[in-house]
Amino acid sequence: MIHAFTFDDTHIVLDVNSDSVHVVDEPAFNLIKDYSCMPAERLLQKYGPVYGPDTVREIIQEIEELVARGMLFAPDPLPEGYLPPGNGTVKALCLHLAHDCNLRCRYCFAGQGDFGGERDLMPLEVGRAAIDFLMEASRDRRHVEVDFFGGEPLLNRSVLLDLVAYGKDRSREKGKEIKFTLTTNALLLDPEMQRFIGENDVAVVLSIDGRPRVHDRMRTTPAGAGSYRIVMDRISQFVHSPYCGEYYIRGTFTRYNCDFSADVQHLAEAGFEHISVEPVVAGADADYAFREEDVDVLLEEYESLTRYLLQRHRQGRPVDFFHFNIELENGPCLPKRLTGCSAGSEYLAVTPAGDLYPCHQFVGREDYKVGSVFNGIVNKRSAELFSHAHIYNKKECQKCWAKFHCSGGCHANALAFNGDLLEPYRLGCLLARKRLECALYLKVKTQQA
Image (cartoon, rainbow, N blue to C red; front, top):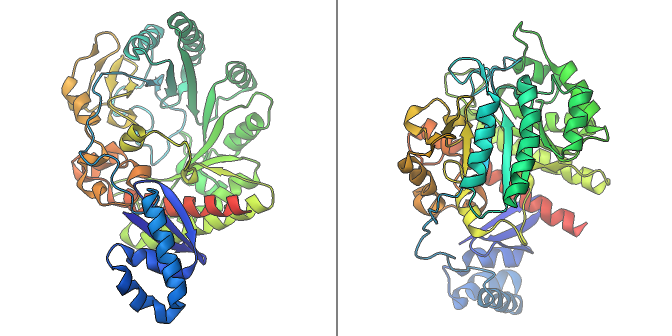
Protein backbone atom coordinates (compact mmCIF):
# COMPACT_ATOMS: atom_id res chain seq x y z
CA MET A 1 0.00 0.00 0.00
CA ILE A 2 1.25 3.46 -0.91
CA HIS A 3 -0.08 7.00 -0.69
CA ALA A 4 1.07 9.41 -3.39
CA PHE A 5 0.19 13.10 -3.19
CA THR A 6 1.35 16.49 -4.37
CA PHE A 7 1.72 19.55 -2.14
CA ASP A 8 2.78 22.82 -3.79
CA ASP A 9 4.53 21.06 -6.69
CA THR A 10 6.35 18.61 -4.41
CA HIS A 11 5.55 14.97 -5.23
CA ILE A 12 5.64 12.69 -2.17
CA VAL A 13 5.10 8.94 -1.89
CA LEU A 14 4.55 7.28 1.49
CA ASP A 15 5.03 3.54 1.63
CA VAL A 16 2.46 2.70 4.27
CA ASN A 17 3.82 -0.56 5.65
CA SER A 18 7.52 0.40 5.79
CA ASP A 19 6.89 4.09 6.63
CA SER A 20 9.42 5.06 3.95
CA VAL A 21 8.94 8.48 2.37
CA HIS A 22 10.11 9.25 -1.16
CA VAL A 23 10.30 12.68 -2.80
CA VAL A 24 10.21 12.12 -6.55
CA ASP A 25 9.87 13.95 -9.84
CA GLU A 26 6.74 13.83 -11.97
CA PRO A 27 7.71 10.81 -14.14
CA ALA A 28 8.58 8.64 -11.12
CA PHE A 29 5.45 9.85 -9.31
CA ASN A 30 3.18 8.69 -12.12
CA LEU A 31 4.96 5.39 -12.67
CA ILE A 32 4.89 4.51 -8.97
CA LYS A 33 1.14 5.10 -8.86
CA ASP A 34 0.62 2.64 -11.73
CA TYR A 35 3.35 0.15 -10.87
CA SER A 36 1.25 -2.24 -8.76
CA CYS A 37 -1.45 -2.62 -11.42
CA MET A 38 0.61 -2.55 -14.64
CA PRO A 39 3.42 -4.81 -15.87
CA ALA A 40 6.66 -3.17 -17.02
CA GLU A 41 5.71 -3.54 -20.70
CA ARG A 42 2.46 -1.66 -20.17
CA LEU A 43 4.22 1.09 -18.21
CA LEU A 44 6.66 1.47 -21.07
CA GLN A 45 3.84 1.68 -23.60
CA LYS A 46 1.96 4.28 -21.56
CA TYR A 47 4.81 6.52 -20.44
CA GLY A 48 7.54 5.91 -23.05
CA PRO A 49 6.04 8.39 -25.52
CA VAL A 50 5.71 10.97 -22.72
CA TYR A 51 9.05 10.75 -20.86
CA GLY A 52 11.17 8.68 -23.23
CA PRO A 53 11.78 4.90 -23.14
CA ASP A 54 15.20 5.12 -21.46
CA THR A 55 13.83 7.32 -18.66
CA VAL A 56 10.92 4.94 -18.05
CA ARG A 57 13.20 1.87 -17.96
CA GLU A 58 15.48 3.63 -15.46
CA ILE A 59 12.56 4.54 -13.21
CA ILE A 60 11.20 0.98 -13.33
CA GLN A 61 14.60 -0.33 -12.30
CA GLU A 62 14.75 2.11 -9.37
CA ILE A 63 11.25 1.10 -8.28
CA GLU A 64 12.19 -2.58 -8.40
CA GLU A 65 15.28 -1.90 -6.27
CA LEU A 66 13.16 -0.10 -3.64
CA VAL A 67 10.66 -2.97 -3.65
CA ALA A 68 13.49 -5.47 -3.11
CA ARG A 69 14.78 -3.38 -0.17
CA GLY A 70 11.31 -3.30 1.43
CA MET A 71 10.94 0.46 0.99
CA LEU A 72 8.13 0.47 -1.57
CA PHE A 73 5.03 -1.72 -1.76
CA ALA A 74 6.26 -3.39 1.42
CA PRO A 75 4.16 -6.26 2.83
CA ASP A 76 1.95 -5.90 5.88
CA PRO A 77 4.17 -6.06 9.00
CA LEU A 78 1.55 -8.20 10.76
CA PRO A 79 -0.14 -10.32 8.07
CA GLU A 80 -1.81 -12.51 10.69
CA GLY A 81 -3.22 -9.53 12.55
CA TYR A 82 -2.36 -8.21 16.01
CA LEU A 83 -3.01 -9.78 19.39
CA PRO A 84 -2.47 -7.32 22.29
CA PRO A 85 -0.38 -8.62 25.20
CA GLY A 86 -3.25 -8.46 27.68
CA ASN A 87 -0.96 -8.39 30.71
CA GLY A 88 -2.92 -5.67 32.49
CA THR A 89 0.01 -3.25 32.74
CA VAL A 90 -1.02 0.37 33.40
CA LYS A 91 1.56 3.00 32.49
CA ALA A 92 -0.30 6.28 33.06
CA LEU A 93 -3.11 7.81 35.09
CA CYS A 94 -5.13 10.97 34.50
CA LEU A 95 -5.99 12.27 37.99
CA HIS A 96 -9.10 14.44 38.09
CA LEU A 97 -8.03 16.68 40.95
CA ALA A 98 -11.11 18.84 40.46
CA HIS A 99 -14.54 18.21 39.08
CA ASP A 100 -14.98 21.94 39.16
CA CYS A 101 -13.67 24.88 37.16
CA ASN A 102 -13.28 28.65 37.40
CA LEU A 103 -14.25 29.04 33.72
CA ARG A 104 -17.40 28.06 31.86
CA CYS A 105 -16.12 27.15 28.39
CA ARG A 106 -19.03 26.57 26.03
CA TYR A 107 -17.54 23.54 24.28
CA CYS A 108 -16.31 21.81 27.45
CA PHE A 109 -16.83 18.04 27.22
CA ALA A 110 -16.77 17.97 31.03
CA GLY A 111 -19.95 20.03 31.46
CA GLN A 112 -17.99 23.15 32.48
CA GLY A 113 -15.98 21.08 34.90
CA ASP A 114 -18.40 18.89 36.86
CA PHE A 115 -18.53 15.94 34.38
CA GLY A 116 -22.29 15.83 34.76
CA GLY A 117 -22.17 15.23 38.52
CA GLU A 118 -21.37 17.06 41.72
CA ARG A 119 -18.67 19.71 41.79
CA ASP A 120 -15.95 18.10 43.86
CA LEU A 121 -12.24 18.01 44.63
CA MET A 122 -10.09 14.90 44.95
CA PRO A 123 -9.19 14.16 48.60
CA LEU A 124 -5.55 13.57 49.36
CA GLU A 125 -6.12 9.95 50.36
CA VAL A 126 -7.64 9.20 46.95
CA GLY A 127 -4.72 10.81 45.14
CA ARG A 128 -2.19 8.85 47.17
CA ALA A 129 -4.14 5.63 46.62
CA ALA A 130 -4.08 6.35 42.88
CA ILE A 131 -0.30 6.65 42.89
CA ASP A 132 -0.02 3.46 44.96
CA PHE A 133 -2.25 1.73 42.41
CA LEU A 134 -0.04 2.97 39.56
CA MET A 135 3.11 1.73 41.25
CA GLU A 136 1.66 -1.79 41.44
CA ALA A 137 -0.31 -1.85 38.18
CA SER A 138 2.71 -0.68 36.15
CA ARG A 139 4.40 -3.98 37.08
CA ASP A 140 7.98 -4.05 35.76
CA ARG A 141 7.59 -0.91 33.68
CA ARG A 142 10.22 1.64 34.70
CA HIS A 143 8.63 4.83 33.31
CA VAL A 144 5.17 5.90 34.52
CA GLU A 145 3.13 9.06 34.06
CA VAL A 146 0.57 11.07 36.03
CA ASP A 147 -1.52 13.81 34.41
CA PHE A 148 -3.20 16.36 36.69
CA PHE A 149 -6.52 17.20 35.08
CA GLY A 150 -9.96 18.62 35.69
CA GLY A 151 -12.02 20.78 35.53
CA GLU A 152 -9.27 23.03 36.72
CA PRO A 153 -6.73 21.04 38.78
CA LEU A 154 -5.18 24.14 40.39
CA LEU A 155 -8.40 24.56 42.36
CA ASN A 156 -7.02 21.63 44.37
CA ARG A 157 -3.57 23.10 44.79
CA SER A 158 -2.55 21.60 48.13
CA VAL A 159 -3.34 18.06 46.99
CA LEU A 160 -1.38 18.59 43.78
CA LEU A 161 1.67 19.76 45.72
CA ASP A 162 1.51 16.76 48.03
CA LEU A 163 1.03 14.24 45.23
CA VAL A 164 4.11 15.40 43.35
CA ALA A 165 6.24 14.82 46.44
CA TYR A 166 4.46 11.54 47.26
CA GLY A 167 4.77 10.30 43.68
CA LYS A 168 8.49 10.99 43.61
CA ASP A 169 9.01 9.17 46.91
CA ARG A 170 6.99 6.12 45.84
CA SER A 171 8.65 5.92 42.43
CA ARG A 172 12.10 5.98 44.04
CA GLU A 173 11.05 3.17 46.38
CA LYS A 174 9.93 1.12 43.38
CA GLY A 175 12.93 1.94 41.20
CA LYS A 176 10.75 3.82 38.70
CA GLU A 177 10.82 7.23 37.05
CA ILE A 178 7.63 9.28 37.21
CA LYS A 179 6.64 12.12 34.92
CA PHE A 180 3.99 14.69 35.88
CA THR A 181 1.92 16.80 33.49
CA LEU A 182 -0.48 19.57 34.46
CA THR A 183 -3.32 20.80 32.22
CA THR A 184 -4.51 24.24 33.30
CA ASN A 185 -6.44 27.28 32.09
CA ALA A 186 -3.67 29.38 33.74
CA LEU A 187 -5.96 31.60 35.83
CA LEU A 188 -4.31 30.32 39.02
CA LEU A 189 -0.82 30.03 37.57
CA ASP A 190 0.72 32.54 39.98
CA PRO A 191 4.49 33.05 40.53
CA GLU A 192 4.58 30.57 43.41
CA MET A 193 2.99 27.83 41.31
CA GLN A 194 5.29 28.67 38.40
CA ARG A 195 8.29 28.19 40.68
CA PHE A 196 6.94 24.85 41.94
CA ILE A 197 6.43 23.63 38.36
CA GLY A 198 9.97 24.55 37.40
CA GLU A 199 11.59 23.08 40.49
CA ASN A 200 9.74 19.78 40.04
CA ASP A 201 10.07 19.42 36.26
CA VAL A 202 6.31 19.31 35.72
CA ALA A 203 5.28 19.45 32.06
CA VAL A 204 2.41 21.88 31.42
CA VAL A 205 -0.45 22.11 28.94
CA LEU A 206 -1.76 25.69 28.87
CA SER A 207 -5.23 26.36 27.47
CA ILE A 208 -5.79 29.38 25.24
CA ASP A 209 -7.65 29.40 21.94
CA GLY A 210 -5.83 32.12 20.00
CA ARG A 211 -7.01 35.62 19.06
CA PRO A 212 -8.88 37.58 21.76
CA ARG A 213 -12.27 37.47 20.06
CA VAL A 214 -11.94 33.73 19.39
CA HIS A 215 -10.88 32.89 22.94
CA ASP A 216 -13.45 35.13 24.64
CA ARG A 217 -16.33 33.76 22.59
CA MET A 218 -15.90 30.30 24.10
CA ARG A 219 -13.81 30.57 27.27
CA THR A 220 -15.76 32.79 29.66
CA THR A 221 -15.89 33.27 33.41
CA PRO A 222 -18.95 32.13 35.41
CA ALA A 223 -20.18 35.74 35.09
CA GLY A 224 -19.92 35.56 31.30
CA ALA A 225 -16.87 37.79 30.91
CA GLY A 226 -14.01 37.03 28.55
CA SER A 227 -10.85 35.53 30.02
CA TYR A 228 -8.31 36.20 27.27
CA ARG A 229 -6.39 39.06 28.84
CA ILE A 230 -5.61 37.44 32.19
CA VAL A 231 -4.95 34.04 30.59
CA MET A 232 -2.56 35.48 28.02
CA ASP A 233 -0.74 37.50 30.68
CA ARG A 234 -0.30 34.48 32.98
CA ILE A 235 0.81 32.16 30.18
CA SER A 236 3.26 34.69 28.74
CA GLN A 237 4.74 35.36 32.16
CA PHE A 238 5.24 31.64 32.76
CA VAL A 239 6.53 30.62 29.32
CA HIS A 240 9.09 33.41 29.31
CA SER A 241 10.19 32.73 32.90
CA PRO A 242 13.14 30.56 34.01
CA TYR A 243 10.65 28.06 35.47
CA CYS A 244 9.15 26.94 32.18
CA GLY A 245 10.40 23.62 30.87
CA GLU A 246 8.30 21.26 28.76
CA TYR A 247 5.04 22.91 27.70
CA TYR A 248 2.35 23.07 25.05
CA ILE A 249 -0.08 25.86 24.31
CA ARG A 250 -3.35 24.04 23.67
CA GLY A 251 -6.33 25.62 21.90
CA THR A 252 -9.61 24.47 20.42
CA PHE A 253 -11.07 25.77 17.17
CA THR A 254 -14.75 25.66 16.26
CA ARG A 255 -16.99 26.54 13.35
CA TYR A 256 -16.62 30.17 14.42
CA ASN A 257 -12.91 30.20 13.57
CA CYS A 258 -12.41 27.87 10.65
CA ASP A 259 -9.53 30.24 9.83
CA PHE A 260 -7.68 28.69 12.77
CA SER A 261 -4.27 29.12 11.17
CA ALA A 262 -4.62 32.80 12.13
CA ASP A 263 -4.92 31.70 15.77
CA VAL A 264 -1.77 29.61 15.51
CA GLN A 265 -0.03 32.64 14.02
CA HIS A 266 -1.31 34.82 16.87
CA LEU A 267 0.10 32.41 19.44
CA ALA A 268 3.37 31.99 17.58
CA GLU A 269 3.87 35.74 17.27
CA ALA A 270 3.28 35.99 21.03
CA GLY A 271 6.49 33.99 21.42
CA PHE A 272 5.11 30.50 22.01
CA GLU A 273 7.11 27.76 20.30
CA HIS A 274 5.06 24.65 21.16
CA ILE A 275 1.45 24.88 20.01
CA SER A 276 -1.49 22.51 19.62
CA VAL A 277 -4.76 23.83 18.20
CA GLU A 278 -7.34 21.08 17.78
CA PRO A 279 -10.83 20.78 16.25
CA VAL A 280 -13.82 20.84 18.57
CA VAL A 281 -15.82 17.64 18.88
CA ALA A 282 -19.49 18.37 19.35
CA GLY A 283 -22.92 17.07 18.44
CA ALA A 284 -24.71 18.44 15.39
CA ASP A 285 -27.07 20.44 17.60
CA ALA A 286 -24.26 22.70 18.83
CA ASP A 287 -24.02 25.98 16.91
CA TYR A 288 -20.22 25.80 17.02
CA ALA A 289 -20.02 22.23 15.66
CA PHE A 290 -18.57 21.67 12.21
CA ARG A 291 -20.84 20.97 9.27
CA GLU A 292 -20.23 19.15 6.02
CA GLU A 293 -19.66 22.40 4.14
CA ASP A 294 -16.80 23.28 6.51
CA VAL A 295 -14.63 20.28 5.61
CA ASP A 296 -12.96 21.70 2.49
CA VAL A 297 -12.31 24.97 4.29
CA LEU A 298 -10.61 23.15 7.18
CA LEU A 299 -8.45 21.07 4.84
CA GLU A 300 -7.30 24.20 3.01
CA GLU A 301 -6.61 25.90 6.33
CA TYR A 302 -4.21 23.13 7.34
CA GLU A 303 -2.35 23.76 4.09
CA SER A 304 -2.18 27.50 4.86
CA LEU A 305 -0.83 26.69 8.31
CA THR A 306 1.81 24.42 6.78
CA ARG A 307 3.06 27.19 4.51
CA TYR A 308 3.23 29.59 7.45
CA LEU A 309 5.22 27.13 9.57
CA LEU A 310 7.61 26.45 6.69
CA GLN A 311 8.14 30.18 6.26
CA ARG A 312 8.97 30.56 9.96
CA HIS A 313 11.39 27.65 9.77
CA ARG A 314 13.21 29.30 6.89
CA GLN A 315 13.36 32.53 8.89
CA GLY A 316 15.03 30.69 11.77
CA ARG A 317 11.89 30.97 13.94
CA PRO A 318 10.55 27.40 13.97
CA VAL A 319 7.32 26.48 15.74
CA ASP A 320 6.56 22.98 16.99
CA PHE A 321 2.94 22.31 15.97
CA PHE A 322 1.77 19.20 17.80
CA HIS A 323 -0.31 17.64 15.01
CA PHE A 324 2.50 18.03 12.49
CA ASN A 325 5.02 16.16 14.62
CA ILE A 326 6.13 13.03 12.84
CA GLU A 327 9.03 10.66 13.47
CA LEU A 328 10.03 8.62 10.45
CA GLU A 329 13.22 7.22 11.95
CA ASN A 330 13.17 5.61 15.38
CA GLY A 331 9.58 6.70 15.88
CA PRO A 332 6.94 4.99 18.05
CA CYS A 333 7.14 1.21 18.20
CA LEU A 334 4.65 -0.80 16.16
CA PRO A 335 2.31 -1.69 19.09
CA LYS A 336 2.09 2.03 19.97
CA ARG A 337 1.22 2.86 16.37
CA LEU A 338 -1.53 0.23 16.41
CA THR A 339 -3.22 1.32 19.61
CA GLY A 340 -2.60 5.07 19.90
CA CYS A 341 -3.30 6.55 23.33
CA SER A 342 -3.94 3.14 24.95
CA ALA A 343 -7.01 4.51 26.77
CA GLY A 344 -8.86 1.83 28.68
CA SER A 345 -5.90 -0.53 28.88
CA GLU A 346 -2.57 1.14 29.70
CA TYR A 347 -4.03 4.59 30.39
CA LEU A 348 -6.87 5.27 32.86
CA ALA A 349 -8.67 8.27 34.33
CA VAL A 350 -9.32 8.62 38.08
CA THR A 351 -12.30 10.58 39.45
CA PRO A 352 -12.24 12.49 42.77
CA ALA A 353 -13.94 9.46 44.36
CA GLY A 354 -11.22 7.14 43.05
CA ASP A 355 -13.23 5.44 40.30
CA LEU A 356 -11.30 4.28 37.23
CA TYR A 357 -12.50 4.97 33.66
CA PRO A 358 -10.91 4.37 30.24
CA CYS A 359 -10.16 8.10 29.85
CA HIS A 360 -11.52 11.50 30.91
CA GLN A 361 -14.16 11.45 28.17
CA PHE A 362 -15.75 8.29 29.58
CA VAL A 363 -16.07 9.57 33.13
CA GLY A 364 -19.63 9.19 34.43
CA ARG A 365 -20.55 6.37 32.04
CA GLU A 366 -21.08 3.58 34.54
CA ASP A 367 -21.06 0.85 31.91
CA TYR A 368 -17.44 1.74 31.14
CA LYS A 369 -16.19 2.07 34.72
CA VAL A 370 -13.16 -0.19 35.09
CA GLY A 371 -12.83 -0.29 38.87
CA SER A 372 -11.27 1.93 41.52
CA VAL A 373 -7.87 2.81 42.92
CA PHE A 374 -8.85 0.96 46.11
CA ASN A 375 -9.86 -2.40 44.63
CA GLY A 376 -8.09 -2.28 41.26
CA ILE A 377 -9.42 -3.25 37.85
CA VAL A 378 -12.63 -5.17 38.35
CA ASN A 379 -14.32 -4.78 34.96
CA LYS A 380 -11.96 -6.99 32.96
CA ARG A 381 -14.36 -7.01 30.02
CA SER A 382 -14.03 -3.25 29.54
CA ALA A 383 -10.24 -3.40 29.65
CA GLU A 384 -10.25 -6.22 27.11
CA LEU A 385 -12.68 -4.34 24.89
CA PHE A 386 -10.37 -1.32 24.69
CA SER A 387 -7.17 -3.32 24.27
CA HIS A 388 -8.71 -4.98 21.20
CA ALA A 389 -9.87 -1.66 19.69
CA HIS A 390 -6.77 -1.38 17.48
CA ILE A 391 -6.42 -0.74 13.75
CA TYR A 392 -6.31 -4.41 12.75
CA ASN A 393 -9.81 -4.81 14.21
CA LYS A 394 -11.21 -1.68 12.53
CA LYS A 395 -12.54 -2.29 9.04
CA GLU A 396 -12.10 1.30 7.86
CA CYS A 397 -8.55 1.49 9.20
CA GLN A 398 -7.38 -1.64 7.40
CA LYS A 399 -7.69 0.08 4.02
CA CYS A 400 -6.53 3.53 5.15
CA TRP A 401 -3.04 4.77 4.25
CA ALA A 402 -2.77 6.86 7.46
CA LYS A 403 -3.49 4.01 9.86
CA PHE A 404 0.01 3.62 11.33
CA HIS A 405 0.13 7.31 12.25
CA CYS A 406 -3.50 7.97 13.17
CA SER A 407 -3.75 4.70 15.16
CA GLY A 408 -7.48 4.54 14.58
CA GLY A 409 -8.47 7.85 16.13
CA CYS A 410 -10.19 8.64 19.40
CA HIS A 411 -12.19 5.87 21.11
CA ALA A 412 -14.59 8.36 22.71
CA ASN A 413 -15.36 10.04 19.38
CA ALA A 414 -15.97 6.69 17.68
CA LEU A 415 -18.44 5.73 20.39
CA ALA A 416 -20.13 9.14 20.55
CA PHE A 417 -20.74 9.46 16.80
CA ASN A 418 -21.05 5.84 15.68
CA GLY A 419 -21.89 3.90 18.83
CA ASP A 420 -18.99 1.55 18.14
CA LEU A 421 -15.37 1.62 19.32
CA LEU A 422 -14.36 -0.05 16.06
CA GLU A 423 -15.92 2.54 13.73
CA PRO A 424 -13.78 5.70 13.57
CA TYR A 425 -15.23 9.22 13.62
CA ARG A 426 -15.39 10.31 9.95
CA LEU A 427 -14.44 13.97 10.35
CA GLY A 428 -11.56 12.96 12.59
CA CYS A 429 -10.30 10.65 9.84
CA LEU A 430 -10.49 13.35 7.16
CA LEU A 431 -8.59 15.85 9.27
CA ALA A 432 -6.02 13.28 10.42
CA ARG A 433 -5.19 12.34 6.83
CA LYS A 434 -4.77 15.98 5.82
CA ARG A 435 -2.58 16.67 8.87
CA LEU A 436 -0.36 13.73 7.98
CA GLU A 437 0.09 14.99 4.42
CA CYS A 438 1.00 18.42 5.80
CA ALA A 439 3.38 16.87 8.32
CA LEU A 440 5.14 14.79 5.65
CA TYR A 441 5.51 17.80 3.37
CA LEU A 442 6.81 19.98 6.20
CA LYS A 443 9.27 17.28 7.27
CA VAL A 444 10.57 16.92 3.73
CA LYS A 445 10.95 20.66 3.12
CA THR A 446 12.59 21.45 6.44
CA GLN A 447 15.10 18.64 5.96
CA GLN A 448 15.91 20.01 2.50
CA ALA A 449 16.43 23.55 3.79
